[in-house]
Amino acid sequence: MSTRREVDTLGEVEVPEDAYWGAQTERARHNFAISGLLPDPVLIRAYAEQKRASAIANRSLGLLEDSITDAVIQAAEEVAGGELRDQFVVDPFQAGAGTSFHMNVNEVLANRANEILGGPRGSYRPVHPNDHVNSGQSTNDTFPTAIRVALLLLGRELDEELHGLEAALGDKARELKAVVTAGRTHLQDALPVTLGQVFGGHADSLARVRGDWMAAAASLRELGLGGTAVGTGVNRSPEYPQAAVAELGRATALPLRVTDTPIALHAGTGDFARYAASLKGIALELGRLANDLRLMGSGPTSGIGEIELPAVQPGSSIMPGKVNPVMAESLNMVCFHVVGAEAAVAAASGAGQFQINVMTPLIAYELLFSLRLLTRGVHVFRERCVRGIRAHREAARRFAERTVALGAVLSPRIGYARAAKVVEESVRRGVPIAEVAARELGISEEEARRLLDPARWTRPGILDPDDLRS
Image 1 (spheres, rainbow, N blue to C red):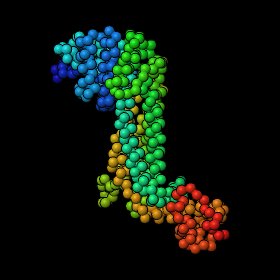
Image 2: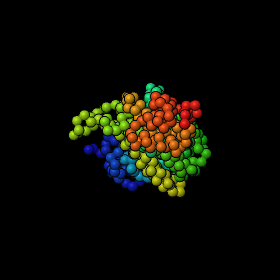
Image 3: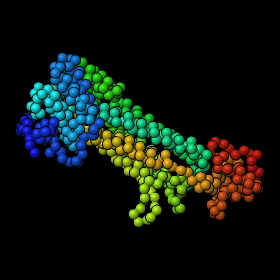
Image 4: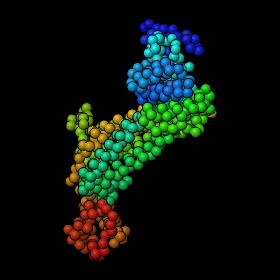
C-alpha cells in the first residue's frame, strides 16, 4: 500500500495515500482495533451538519474567509449526504470523549476541502483540521452535540414505526372486538375479556411508553455547542453559539436551542441516561407484548391456541411441520439487548468527572444501536407477525365459558363463600361453571348460561337481584 507521511504532535505517521483521514485517525485505527465496528452513519451525518453550521457561523462573524468556508461547507454537505462513508474508520470503543472520531471528521473534511481547492491530501493548506474545520470548537462540546442531533434524527424513524405498530394493534383490536376469551391473572383463570380489549390494551400501553420516550427526547434539543473545552466558551466568539445552533436547526429541521448552562451539559449526561431509560421502557412493553402473543398462540395441540401467529418459516431441524413464534422470539432478543444497553449507558453516565464525561463514545454507540434495533425490530414484527394474527374463535369461546372466575359474578348476590363452593365443584368435576350454578341456585341450566354469558361480563356491571332466586 502506498502511503504519505504526515506529522502530528507526537511525530511522523504513515497514512494510506488515498485516505481522506490523517495522522490522528491513523493512530486511532491501530490503537482501537477492538470491536471491528464502524461509526454509525447518522452520527457521521450529524457531525458533518454541525461542522457545516459552525463554518457558516464563523464566516458570519468574520473568523473564516470565504474560500475556506465554501470548501468546508461543500465537504460537509457531501459527507452529510452519505459520501466518503468509508473514510470514517474509528472504532466506537475508542479514546475517551470521542476525540479520535472527532479528529477523523476534522481530517476528512479538511482533506476534502483542500482537494476542492486544488490541493493534495495531507497538506492541510489552506484548510487545517484544527485551525479551520474546528474553529471555535472542541471535542467536548461538538461530540455531545452530534450525539444529540443523531438521536433526534434517527428517532424520527422509530417514532414512525411505533405509530405503525400502535395502529396495527388498534386494527386488530377492532377486528377481534367480539371474540371473547378467558382473562388470566397469575397464569390462572380470571374473568372474561375480549381479544379486542387485549390488543387495545397493548396499543394503549405502547402509546404511553412512547410518550415517555418523546419527553426524554425533547431534552436533547438543548445543545452545549460553544462551550468548547470545559463549558466556559474559550476560543469562540460570544455570538457563535446562537449563530451555529440556528443554522444547525435549519439544516436538520430540528427545534434546537442553545443551553444557558454549557458547563452542565459538558459534565452531566443525565439527558442521555433518561433517554436510555425511556428506550428500556419501550423495550419492556414490547417484550411483554411478544410474550403474551407467544403464550396466546402456543400449541397447536398442547397449548392455549386462542390465536394463530403467521407461519413465516419452519421451526425445527428434527420435528417436521413444527412452526415456532419466531418473530416474537426475535423481538424478545431485541428487547433484551436494549435493556442491557440501558445498564451500560447508566454506568457510563455516572462516570463523568469534573468538567467532562469521557464515556460519551460508549453512550453514543449504545443509544444509536438500540434505536436501530428497536426501529427494525418493530417494523418486521408488525409486518410479519401482528398484521397476520388470526383468532381461533371457538377455542377462545371455550376458554371464556369454562373460566371458573365467572364465580365472581355470583358473589355480590349469594356471597363470596357460597360462590367459592360453586367454583370448587366446577373445578373438581371439570364441568362449566354454569352447570354447577344452575343446580346450586335452583334455576335452569339454560338460564344459568344466559346469566353467566362471558360476553356480558367483559364490561362493567353487577348481577341484577331479579336474576337470581336463592
